Image (cartoon, rainbow, N blue to C red; front, side):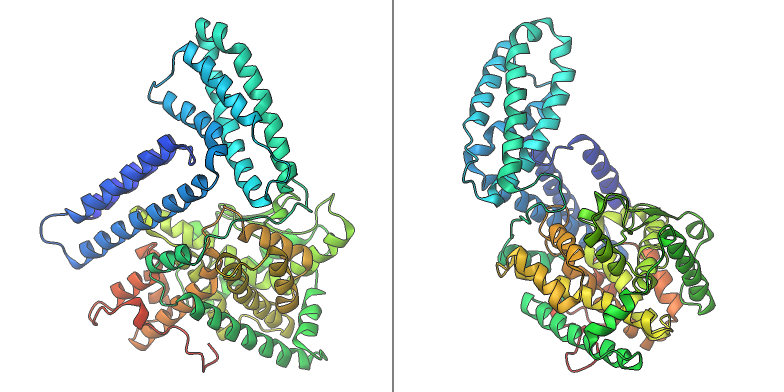
Amino acid sequence: MRELVEDFAFEHAEYEKFWSLPSSAVCRNNWRQFYESWLSKADQAKGRLTEDDKLDQHLLKNCCRRRLHALNTREQQINSLGYEAGPFLWLLDLEAGRWSMDVPSPTDCADMMDQAKQGIEGIKTEGMVQVHALKLMNLAAEAQGAWETWQERVIAYDPEMVWWCTRPAEQLTEALGSKIKALEEACGQKGEPDDALVGTPVGRESIEESIRLEEVPCAIEQMLEIAEHHAAWCRDQMARIGEELGAETWWDAVQLAMKEQAKPGVQAQAAHDVAVAMTEWLERKRLITIPEIAKTTWRIDMNTLAGQKTMPYSPYGGQCMIASYPPMGMDHETKGMSMRGNSLPCLHLVTPHELIPGHHLQLTMSRRYRPDRRLFSTPFFVEGWTLHWEMLQFEEGWGVEPLDKIGMLWWRLHRCMRIIVSLGFHVFDMPPEEMVHRLVDDGAQPEAMAIGEVRRYIGDDYPPLYQCAYLIGGLMMHKLYDEMRADGWSPMEFHDRVLKENGMPIWSLRSLFKRDEPAGSPEDWSVYPLGSMG
């Protein structure tokens, strides 16, 4: 089975480079056939299968099903646009067809360009619902890129195309650009910090299917219950620690922590120092093996003004942590919020999350051990690993100073609020404005940061269940850690083994580690007894 999985990983990478227009019907059809064919290949695996083979077989099938579900969700979004999507889809398929030498005749091209122009001009944006306008705008922008490439590759090299299509192409280009501007106006998206918060809920049915495919042992209502309970615990802890500092409430305690800020020009150095100290702490406590290559191939970059529109905190950017701090051009009020949200106590936790033992170490190891399994990874595994460490660091005394402890707990509260507002949006029709208010009022987030977070939650860049994956995945990984410690594993043995097995749903990882026990199902696994601290 491992050879089959490696073949799948290779072919998937080739498809990603080739069928690269996600909204094109041609590309979507090819991807659908790809995943369905690999489901069949996994089912037909012959010979005696070892336990490892059976695991890989399950992971391969699960991966194909998860990606087919994402493909179905994308197709539903496109179909909801109705006839107005037609001209843009034609432009996408025109470019995708070129890759297989499927190019219409010059006269047919000219006719179809004129029809596409008329179709685009016929789209009435006045009074259009913002969500509809946003989805059309994104589709039109994807089509615009494909259309520019097609013109460069086809018209310029065929004299007959030049004669027939030059003017129709110019008119179509003009109509397309004009309509994109009108759609931007209709959905309130001008590339500015105050752009409208617009997104499309996927609904309960889609979320429930994602929960099943991710092998998560919590239904929607259970996730919400866990998040509310754990959020209350975080606030209680912050209030208790805050009393030592003279804070009257948990909110006051957070504000004290947020006042501890780096001076301008120092944020990158502060993050660097935290990363070095964390690596030394991990090795001193013998919690995990850190290869030398992982210790020497990371750096700190600074987040841009545009990047902070949707990533107001510090993300990981491929061998670097992108530290957030107010850049030139940020207005004074937002600057103050950014400095509070990226304070030094908050940096005390987010830096290890992004670098070591978090995403940098995780991704370094995934390229080294069982790289064929990288496609099997899920948000619950990726973010669950980092959240498990956040919990373990708190338990093991990484936060020594009271303000550092408050910063760590505030981030934990943030994970809870992500579940509450993202499920609120996708399942219970919570408006984006209310999402912002909940993050501010119940999560003590600076308003500008909350707006940036919500903009990301409701966008198309992340799976709808992604924001739940932090805390829920962390509780799953942390529960598995406790179980394996009870079975005699050392902390280093557990953490090294997780990374060397590479990505997979955490329930599958548990089945691998506890192979001698009855299999059961995710629903039988209680990862968070609500009567305890958690």
